Amino acid sequence: MTPITPSWLESTVFYELYPQSFLDTNSDGIGDIEGIIRKLDYIKSLGANAIWLNPCFASPFRDAGYDVEDFYAVAPRYGNNADLVRLFEAAHQRGMKVCLDLVAGHTSDQHPWFRSSCSAKRNKYSNWYVWTNSVWEEGDNMIRGYGDRDGNFLTNFFYHQPSLNYGYANPDPTKPWQLPVSHPDVQAVRAELFKIMRYWLDLGADGFRVDMAHSLVKADPDLKETMAFWADVRAMFDLDYPEAVLMSEWSDPAKAILAGFHVDFMLAFGKPPAYTSLLRKEKGRDLNPSAQDGHSYFDKEGKGNIREFLDTYLEHYLIIKDKGYITIPTGNHDCPRLAMGRTQEELMTVFAMIMTMPGIPFIYNGDEIGMRQVECLISKEGGYSRTGARTPMQWDRTLNAGFSDAASSNLYLPVDPDPGRPNVYDQESDPMSLLNVVRRLARLRKEHSALCADGNFIPLYAEPGKYPFIYQRSNASGDFVIAINPSAQPVQASFCGSHRIGSLHKIEGNKVRCQVVNADFQLEMPGISYAIFKCGAPFGSGLRNNN
Ligand code: NOJ
Ligand code: CA
Image 1: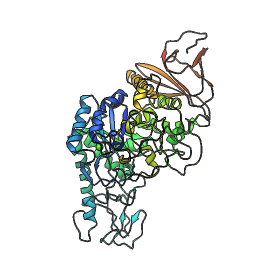
Image 2: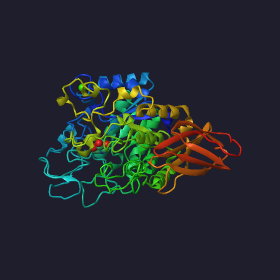
Image 3: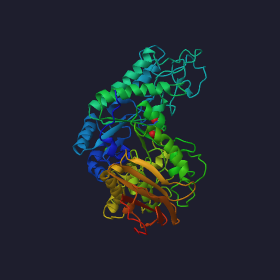
Image 4: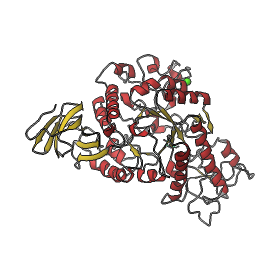
């Protein structure tokens, strides 16, 4: 059967939504599903037509909901299952999609399956998690002495997130507790995951972002068994849910897309990681707090190297191009805010690139107004250094920035205390605000299919250690040239015209001088600027300016 890609994906812009911090409608200080429903029109106004909702299921919330206690129930603090169905319906009425977060690899230690698994008495769930046969047996990522059961359990992330048992690709014969993937109990866990997915898809969900999707099968060095599992999941999607999307937190598109995912996030892949080299290389701004100091391409110092991003990106892009999509997110709930150390103008250059690259753009809620990283917060729900990127959405200048009517001391997290913090209301009325630039860029993308997910991507100027970065997007309906100069210095670059790039007409961006000399285009760009050009027929020889 030919793999099926949901028809809506090609022109989609996603909005990642952290429900705790979005909008509180019952004054308990925590965002809720009703709040999301009330803001659907706002999300749509951004040009985003799909939502990735961080986990909203019953949980003790020791990892912000990535510690699920019941996969079939919405956490009461957000509402109930009927509310989530209402959200699906309200989104669908607006032509929007809602995708859920599927924590496939582990549960909370409070999940009834795990509690049963902890029992010294054998039961249905004994093998649903990975346990050694004795507490004295050493192993990596094993938690010792947890309960009455004589064994250590394998954990996936925090200690309270025991790994569900998807089996071992190469079980060690000296460790009989390492079950093969064909073991009936392992098969039962896998069947349960299918059941969970069907449950929500049947209720109207439009797909899933899968947490740590690469981590399921253990002792699987080439990830063959993990990929085989996801291929089975994709077969179910193709057959029964062809319009639903499967997106992975895998960070290896060449593997994830071949395994069956439609979309993979570009976060940690490459050496140095391509995403980090592009957007977050400096200490404190990286996903990894012990990152080396350095410069990302989007630092105004102009010391970044576009090739660190591009070479890795192209390697993966060329493999997956006709099979699925890479996403370059503006950020997420795990990494420091994009706005850290950047002005609104600098953020515009980032959005200009993210919104004109192939694949699917993801906007992390609040990045569209340049919400800041809030420093020095006490960790909330296992956020630790991630907490500062999870503060309440800033809607306006009223109490708690319009996030909640609760007393400020009762909020999920404090609102950014900076008196100059950005907010939606103020940016709405300013045509030059980041919010409105994001909207214009999203609109442009939608209006021109060459700028959407499938349009070809051809780098035109991408020199090591140099600025700007210039590339072409094209398909049968037209050609576009995008030039991005994140450095504070004015820069110049030239690239060859072609029968597809005969002349350039700027349709968005800053003042950029463009000359045609013979067949070459020469661009002069001011510091911190971008320009999007539509390509036209050749002007003929001579000079042309295009401001
Ligand atoms: C990745 C999620 O994005 C992160 O927030 C979570 O803590 C871990 N996976 C564990 O589920
Ligand atoms: Ca609430």
